[in-house]
Length: 72
Image (cartoon, rainbow, N blue to C red):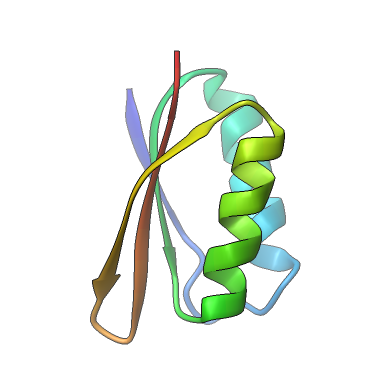
């Protein structure tokens, strides 16, 4: 299952909390996280890895980033 968390426009820790919530709901699979700052990109990536998820890809997209994380 693939889901997308649109955390653009939110400042930390909100993007991390939104991502953690979605990871908990999904359990495994693939999640795309949209963020608009370097800080959010780094914090979301770090939080995902701390929960056993892998950061598969980070792409610049518009004014921000699309982070692909997956587990399982």
